[in-house]
Length: 132
Image (cartoon, rainbow, N blue to C red; front, side, top):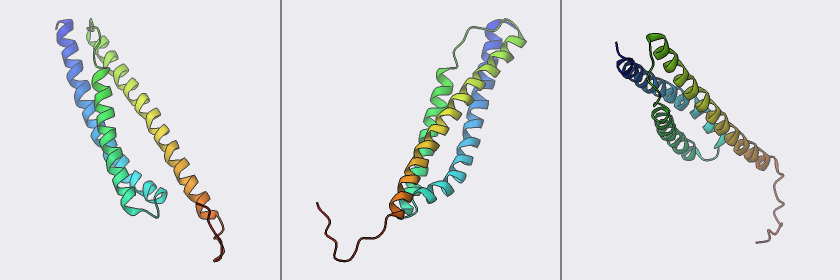
C-alpha cells in the first residue's frame, strides 16, 4: 500500500470517527445541557430551549469545521504512522473541544450565579421610587 493510499484510509477513518463522535457528543450535550440551561434560565423557559438548540448547532459547526481544518498532514510511510496520525488528530480535536466546552460552562455558570444574586436581593418596599 502506498503512503498516499494509507493517508486516504486514515482520512476516511478520521472522518467517520469525527462525525460519529460529533453526533454522539451533540446528543449527550443537548440532553444533559437542557437540565442545566433550564436551571440557568429558570424564569425564561423558552430561552433555555432556544439557547440549547443554538449551542448544539454551534457545536456541530465548530466540531466538524475544526475536525476538517486539522485533517491535512504529511503522508504516513507505514500503517503504524497512519494509526499514529489518526490518533494524534483525534486527540487534538477532543482536547480542543473539551477546552471550549469548559469555557462555555464557565459562561453559563456566571450567568446562573448572576441570576441567583438577583434572586437574593430583598424586595423593594411598596412606596419605593426607582430612579430611571
